[in-house]
Length: 344
Image (cartoon, helix red, strand yellow):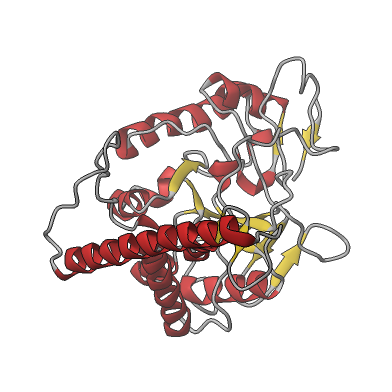
């Protein structure tokens, strides 16, 4: 068995000019298209003048009526014969949206300053209308990967969007300041939880869920799965599915294998209890440094970034410090943080 590690006003004016300025071949302020002489010509000029005067009077009356209507906002304007009465336009939705957008931008900038970020985090694009096809990363497959339709293990989502995905594992540290920071900054992330680390405070993760965070499976006890039998692996994964349903109201479709280690049994067991995807990571961020899977040490579009729920008892810093390092780096590189499940 194989082991795998790891309205236009100008138009209206032009129409008035056209109607007043062109009559029977005449043009105001310029030469006519033909020449008229004698009595016939003078008669035509007088007739044209009367028409122009009549139209001018009508225009004055129209303007007066309009002014009267404007002076009384509640005065009804009867529709012209054969026309339907126009309803008042709805509230200016675009203006309202622009106002909300400006307010959100200002709030995001204020939050970035409050949490000590060098730049305001970039806003991700809208989720793709068509989800990318996720396949196993080359070299990360197991035997019968495709013909058994096993969950793919992948480190990067195929996308042209300049985004990365933040994933946080286990659930050991439960820092309320971390929740507040991510909520104020509107940063999406996915949590992979192990029951032995979260069972002392399921409520913390319910708060996370209620804020829109997706909670996924990271096994019951975080074991080295390839060292277990198929039945034991299935127990670790499928029983955690039951706990996730009971505590958070949902059976996940995504699992992360502990340490990024797995074999064929791991994928078969995961599929048997409803798992569709098994992402690992391409970069890992710590409170004091980054680690990269690729030799060029560069971040790529669609990369999955790993970090852990850790605090000062294990790191030289807090989850807030860890997120500050993460956000400063990805923003400087021109990446936005997107929600992983929007691409799956």
